[in-house]
Amino acid sequence: MKIPIVKLKNFFRVAIKKIKSFPLLVAKNIFPSFLELFLIVIIIGVSVYYYYGVLAKVNGEQAEIEVPQLDRTALRSVLRQMDAKDSRLIEAETALYPDPFNPIIPSNLEIVDQ
Image (cartoon, rainbow, N blue to C red; front, side):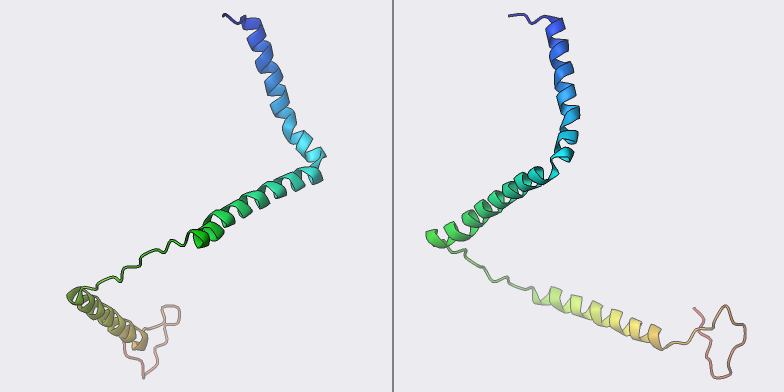
């Protein structure tokens, strides 16, 4: 079965016109469009809640929770790195640096060279 090219072009021309007029149609009828979309969202939300909430309780399937085992040596090394970082941050907070915008240096200020 062969479709004539003229009919095919006409079909696409009509389809494009309808697609282009769809946003205008929605804009003219904004309240009913909003209600339809809101109803669709409510239906999807209720179905997801029913599937994951109600059916999970009815079936009574319990997920088995495995307690993770910690590697003590890796944990110690991470804690040592965190302590070293904390000590560097404390040293940086207590050091006084000169103000580059104010050339007057107070007498009680220690200049830190890096």
